[in-house]
Image (tube, rainbow, N blue to C red; front, side, top):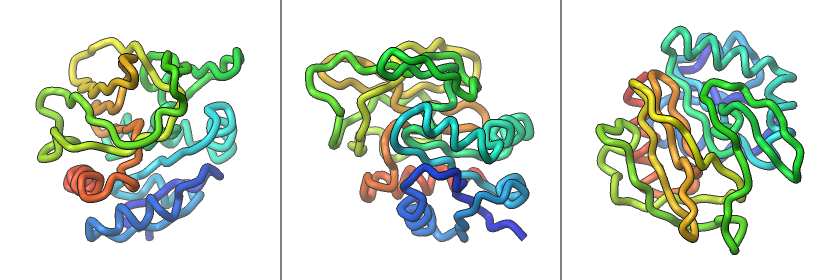
Length: 205
């Protein structure tokens, strides 16, 4: 029997911190690579740290891309974090090498145009209008650790895009579309604001 929330284990870190952060909201959380459990869960969390290509390789190894597509098609709540967020886009370019992403959203993950990289620490965001994810935390700060991001993403019906800036370079901080929500920052490292954000997500289960 699947737990209400599964944190997908595909070999890309932050699993336990994500598990603990979601559990603080009061739901049962299990970390597993079992696709049946992940498919059956009320909510799925896809974390990720490190390189885009390595995360995609790990996700492919557990057929995670197909799992995410299934859940999107079925309207089952899914939350992706950091590189888990990045791999949802069409492709990623690191050190001149382009790797294919899951391709749920059009967009290229590329190095931010900033003098100081990584973009590490607390930053504000500009939430999308009527954001469910940021309800009650629209003016809070969240914790980022990344050098790459999506700097162009087209508006679309039902797609809510939250933006942030680092040294004047604007990038996608979060996306909400149907049951699929994702954040470039780390809610699990964002203190009480992150807990409230995760609580907003859990409320959709």
